[in-house]
Length: 332
Image (cartoon, rainbow, N blue to C red; front, side):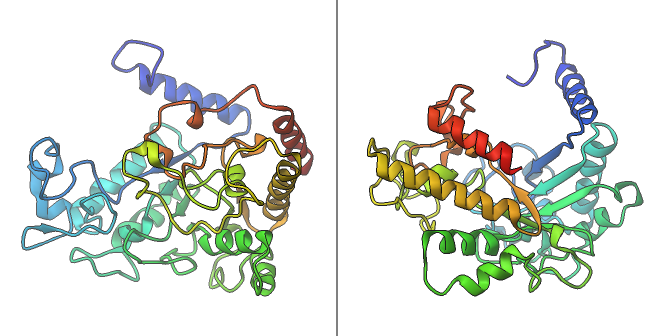
């Protein structure tokens, strides 16, 4: 699944080759990495969830209190990244991917959790973050934080950046969604967001430290954002209880897929409105794969568990999809 060759080292060799060829084409390579939790779950999963850190030193590698796991991630455990031993392990991991594999940057999932102390208290200068930021061998590497965690630590504009880190600008996403769908009272903030969010990115940072986005791999695709008022995650097996409930979406008059031309025309126009706002905003734009041809996941806004066409890239698209791709090519 991860390599063409069958040798134990095939995946490494092929990955390095991929990075080299992308660099030759002028394309940088970023890794989306998760250092906030592991697959070992919490204290309720000591059987099949017993893989690695629990067997080494649970209270070193995880944030715990009296044997209970603190769960700031929604996944049963939270890595104690600012423990000196864990911070060193983290540093070694980042250096490996840069020095050995040639990676240009990282996006850190739920990065606010990575700022917590060994007892879970948020730190202004977390040692693990400071350590990789000030490593002279990583000076040209780009670091991007998803500056929140699963229990309300929200650090958009306030993530410990040391003058270097960029952030997923969640306030940009929320405001632009509201403005484009026509919510009242959003014009002033919309102007601030498309002009670089100066209220958030000062004190040593520039507009390009704001990673502007409308949608991401978590949540609705762009076309679903204009096609559904509610999430439709029944096929995920959690009775539609999973996934974000507050999406600031608008279905343009009818829920889901439709053959009505007037509604589909409005939906495609809204997609273009979103893309114009994104590409003309000061900052660094981020586009989700498939939005350039109006990819839909059928209203599923938590489709990580779906290994099926709704998560695949569709090379053969509809006439409307081709028109959106042409529009995006011209816009870029």
